[in-house]
Image (tube, rainbow, N blue to C red; front, side, top):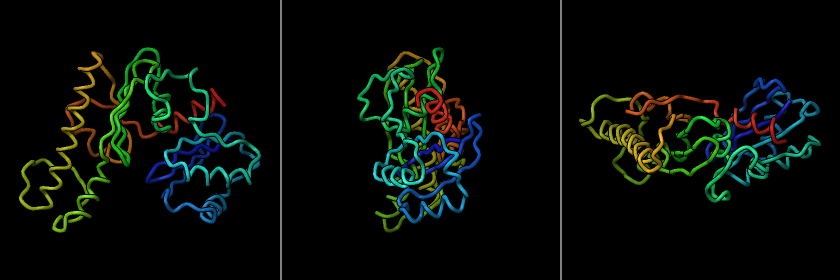
Length: 248
């Protein structure tokens, strides 16, 4: 069995995966809450059999959280705990930008989809809203915009008269009160941002792309933009499985 993990700014996702790539267990928890005691509780509660683990691989954008999990697992398992960017990935993907400045989650997502025929834009609605451009087997670069949830919370925290709202699909653009006006601004504002950035990527590269959406708000916006998209909620774990099979 393999322990595979995705450590994000907001949430950490742990997966127990069989040799045949079947996901046996999923465990999600808030990244900022993690400590040794919490990890011990999580693994005991889920009855992890550490002696059955053969490979451990994480993608992480929170170095301190990864270090803590790595330290915890090193006391339980005699297998090395790898982070994606510590591996030699040149045999899997070509990267045209500064390797040190790409999040390992974005590399993992790109490797998950990469083939020699198609071009992809990977749109991930996480703490940040990211666009990754993959031209056949080459990571070409990307775009980082503010995350929807983060922006909503910032507006609520900074503007006294703005209510805390939950973003949902709306049909009207012009709001008739503060709440509907904020919803419209975020919903249609981000829909427009997405369409425009994809349009500009197409124009700048002179290529056509399959657009893959994933992450928290992808379900909400996938049918409300002009661009045809493919929803893939498991892109990161599939990338981790692929890397663990081919590299480690």
